[in-house]
Amino acid sequence: MKIRVYYEDTDCGGIVYFANYLKFCERARSNIFFEKGLSPHQDTEFFVVKGIEAEYIKSAKFGDLLDVTTKVLSKTAVRVEILQEVYRENELLFFSKVKLVYLKNSKPARIPKQILEIFE
Image (tube, rainbow, N blue to C red; front, side):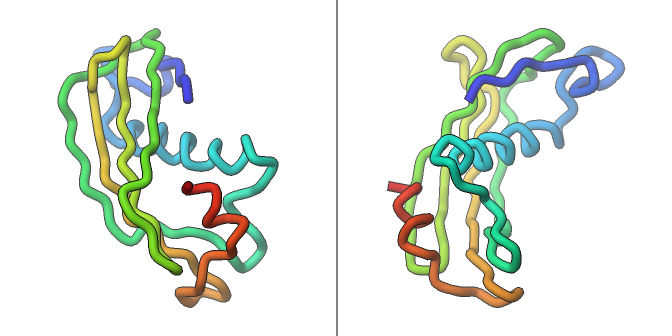
């Protein structure tokens, strides 16, 4: 997913604020569903972040065009672990390993087949 860095994404020095990399990754995860005509949230069923490991390598700046990639590392009936990376012209700026758990009525539940197939 391509993301342009806008002024609102930066600090007073024109550098992307650290928390916004997580927002960029969240948008890319949601976009995976939107591209399939689905929603990442279904009434009382949705994914939550159980854990995240993040590494900041270089800074993105105002006006940069970023590419956010998403790769599945592992999956089970109730959990998906993914690697998301943020690049600027093939230069790795940030990566995160994200553990997602599927909830139904606020309890861990089996991921429906249609949704699990998204992570093939």
